[in-house]
Amino acid sequence: MEALAPPYREVLVLRDLHELTAPEVAAQLDISVDAVKSRLHRARMQVRTVLMASGYWFNGTAAEPHGPARQQRD
Image (tube, rainbow, N blue to C red; front, side, top):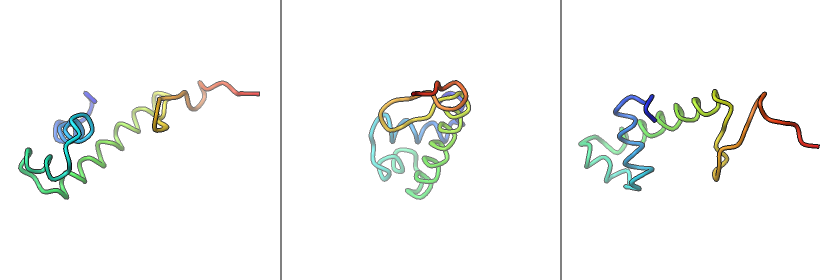
């Protein structure tokens, strides 16, 4: 999260960690709801890219090894 630009990090923290609604985030940051949605999408894509590059991906419940580091199951 530290690698995210401040506008993306702010939206991601307010929406996903503090669980505010998009209109609540928009009001707090004095931006439009569309801007919140756009920034949130971009922030999540950047986080996903970092997780994938590091060999992990998010399956909805936990990070799991993915890619070359992952062992084959018999």
